Image 1 (cartoon, one colour):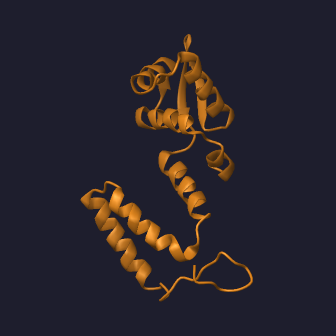
Image 2 (tube, rainbow, N blue to C red; image 1 turned 120 degrees about the horizontal axis):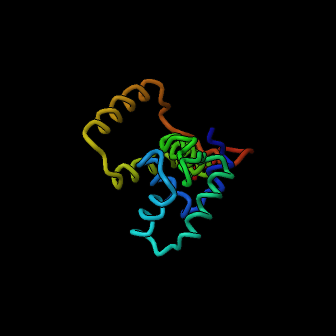
Length: 145
């Protein structure tokens, strides 16, 4: 299960390890090392340390396969990305989140299928959307951020 603590405490380097595990599924230590060393100038011991940290954080699990360890993710990539995004959005003023999403949509590669799903979701959301989203930065009074 993803918790805010897991997301908050995962480093950029650990994200790199997780992306490889999510992409390849069950994976031997040597495969992770080979993949990462094509992208990064990291030593085997650094990569093994990162993997060990992810096991301690509960994001990877291991099993023995002969003399090798096999790693797999305990959380899906989508779950982890969603929690990280929710955490980031929690730091933003409600009034500006829509504009931030517009900027992200400009920058993020989207398939036609993704766009169709977004359009459908936006059409549904529009049914109950307020005319204006208020600032939630101050507890005592409304403010136009």
